[in-house]
Each structure stands twice: as structure tokens, then as C-alpha cells.
Image (tube, rainbow, N blue to C red; front, side, top):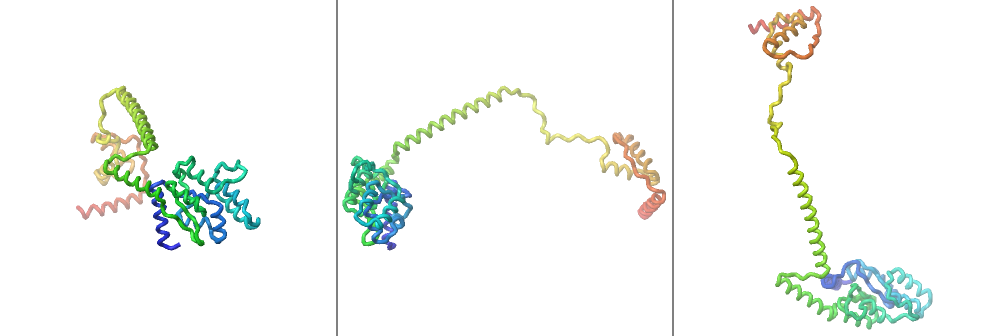
Length: 309
């Protein structure tokens, strides 16, 4: 496919999507003659349709078209591949299977595309047909993309006059709506808005009731005097000596009183009691050193004191 034609097809499908709501996967109605011609030209029908429509497709075939394939005047070996390809597609019920003979392609597809002569493609079908009568009928229906094969080339027809008129009318309506500033909504959108408003009102009422219950609980709670901030209150002082106080008390004693460790502890307790400090709750046992080591310690301490004096 040439680049210029491919770009035209992409823009054409975008126009169908904006004007008539076409979206992927596109529902493609295929007739029996289309299957025969693509097989004769040795073309991959499904891949070619995806390339032309620029998107994924959902191939569909009517019951009458399958019956046309069964009744082809060709050998069975030639019909079997065509029938297998048709069976691989989704079956679109046209409700003509109860008839003894299948209807023509025009009668069958016209009843599927525009039932009751509505002239509107309600189900957004893309029609792939080789019969000129079918394509002529579809041009009079609004919003029907047409695809056919010509000399082993798959072609998409431009928009018909009826489709172009509907599209231009929708664009003019959008322009007028923009000037007025009051966008029109579909009935479905209005119903959704009403449901959303009702849900929001019910949720608001429930939240108001919950807030009222919380306020009632707060009113019932008695108010008393508030205590001080625990972070700003000075922490109470622990009883007993701290590590710095015990060291200062030991350094305040004279050097000659360090002969017996047990006596030193007793002096510390007396010193604290005289200064008004409470003695420790439990008496700590001190390790008694040997006389030789104690003399060495006193000698070292005396040497440290003499230079300073």
C-alpha cells in the first residue's frame, strides 16, 4: 500500500471514529464473494483488512453467506479452504437460517446493517463486499465504511454524500454549541449525572450524620482542669549520688585517709550526710588490695603531688 493512500485511509477512519463512534476492534461484515476473490488473488484477507483500516478487526459473516459457499458450483477441494476460513470468523445471526433457500447478499446484509429501513448503521459495521449493489445500498446508509478488492488491491471508498452531510451537520451543531456556551448532552450522560448527584447527596448526608454523632460524644465528655505540658516540666532528681558527685566526694578527702578502702566508703557516707545529701540505699563492696600494691599507689600519688606544691 502506498504511503499517500494509507494516510488517507487512516484519516478516514479517524473521521468515522469522531463522527460516528467507531473504535477498535472494528466489526467487519464480509460476504462470500469477498472470500472467493481474495482466495483467487492469493491475498490474506484478514491481514489486508487490518492494514487498510489501521487497527484490529473482528471479522464477521452472516449465515446466508456461509450457505452461499456451500452451494458454489466448484469442486469440493476448492470449497473446503473457503468454508474453513468462513468458519474461523464470528457468526453474525441474520435469522434467515429457517428459510429453505438463503437470501441474496443484498437482502441479508441490508437487514443486518439497517434493520427496518432505519438508514442508520447502529452497530457500527464496516462492510467488505464485492457486489456493487451492496455498496450502492450502503452509500445511502449513514456512517458505513466500505472496502472492496480491485485487481488484487484492497481499497476503501471515501465517505458517501449522506455520510458527509451528517458529519457536517454534527460539526455545525458543535460550533453553535461552542458559541452559546451550553454543551448539549445525551440522555445517557444526563442519567449518569443524575445518579452521580444522588450518590453525592447520600454520601453527604451520611457524613453529616457521622459528624453529628461525633459532636454529641464530644459534648458529653466532661471538661476538667488541664495538667501541665509533660515536656516543659522539670524532671525530679533521683535519690543517691550520681557518678560525678561520688568522684568529687572522693577527691575532697585527704590523701592519708585512703589507706583502707572500706573506711573511705564510710567517710564518703558521713560526708554526704553532713552536707544534707541522702546516703545511697545499698552499700557497695570495695575490693581490698594487697599491702604491697597499696604502698606503690601511695608512692605514685605522692610523687604527683610534690611538684605541684
